[in-house]
Length: 492
Ligand SMILES: Cc1ncc(COP(=O)(O)O)c(C=O)c1O
Image (cartoon, rainbow, N blue to C red):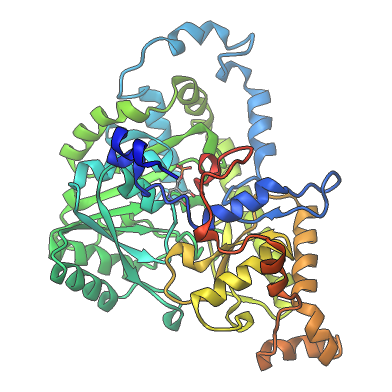
């Protein structure tokens, strides 16, 4: 809690709620931090399924590092470069690094487009890159349209320090959460009527939390929409290389070449290596803008969030290794697909469906039939049972600003196979118990559970309220003592 005294002493930013930490999204993290699962040391703990991290390919990166000691400045082979890397760097970044990133971005997009290294601007992760682009495009009070459900961190990243706002474009399950022209127009018109100055549209492709990609036609419509309105289009493509299935991934960089009279000054891409390479700790964020003024201003601003020169040095060598990169990209999407299919098929067997997705480090689980009431209170009641009883930290749809209760995001690439099996077992017993009493557990009957909408909870959620488990996450203090603030790691 901010005391009255501090609210006088500190700035408005320091004392407002724009960090977004007091939401269920972050509360699930706290539940995990209090009682983290460990296969042998704490097998009854909470399993972290709220962390969109790609941990499936570290062996490939570690192998490359072992074979290329000269790329690290802290090895006998590489130390001769130590001084050159450690001294002052300007905000342009190493040119080899920018070239390597441009080449990598092109490879991730199937080589169908090229990127100009001189347009690569550094930010501290996609978090810093998104904020940087906002500082360049919006004044305090201006707004960006953002299709929802969307990444919970956007409230903080786009608005906390810049003073910009998010106007959600509500998408729902009636068309698999696709962004339609009507939804965009109505959000835009409503904002105008409310006297909000809309400066742009921000999309995430592939989507977090849906794990779906935008098709070429939809992307063209979005580009036309921003052109018609003369507003910006920021495309957060942080999950570009996580596409693991058909239809294959299409980037806005391809589409702008195909839209007639596209004003490229309005188009900006945000990228990062946090997801595609599983390196969120490296804080490699990129703004790739087609607008010269944004590149120029963004570069100066990037002084506030440069990528460390040591990281640039290592990655320049790694990403310039064509054989390594090709193998990494194909192996990573293969492993993501295997893990995704294993998990979602395991859920299907107990009658749980997910939105069909072809990308991402997560899937969007449909638990609407488990809700006691079809409201967000009902969703939170179910979420409490899942976290406290089943001990799974999944993230409720409301924290992604989903307009429909009953959806949950489940991350699948941040754990080992044994933990996946424990998680699946917990989900099975979680939904299975009550059903088992009424339906014989045959494969045929399992299918019936799915069809007759008979899924019900096997735990008494009221017990939690009586026993003082997490009860109303939005009521809890985000600043309650814990080993490590979730904000530090909640960049997912
Ligand atoms: C859509 C989206 N944008 C940005 C970020 C922030 O990423 P970074 O770790 O590179 O700051 C995330 C992290 O989950 C994300 O999902």
